[in-house]
Image (cartoon, rainbow, N blue to C red):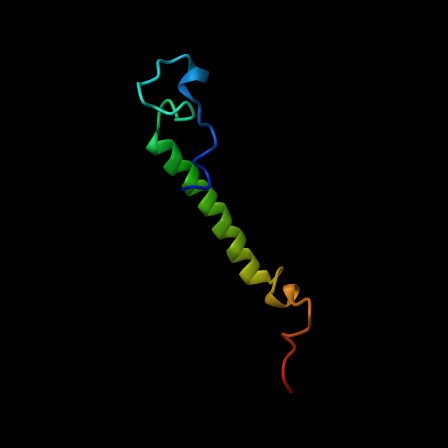
Length: 75
C-alpha cells in the first residue's frame, strides 16, 4: 500500500480547496481508499505474475547474484 500511496496525491493548495486549521501543507486534500486499494491490487498482481514467470522459466536465479563464488555446489 505504501508503494502506491504517494502517486496521484494532490494537496489542498493544488486543488484550490480550503485547508483545515492545523492540517499540514503537504497533507492530501482527499483520501480515496478505493483508488489506493485498486492501484495496490494492480501492482501486486503484476509483481506476482513476474515472480511466477521467473519461477517457471528461471530468468533470475540465486546464482545470478553470486559475485564471489560462494554458492558453488560442494562435490
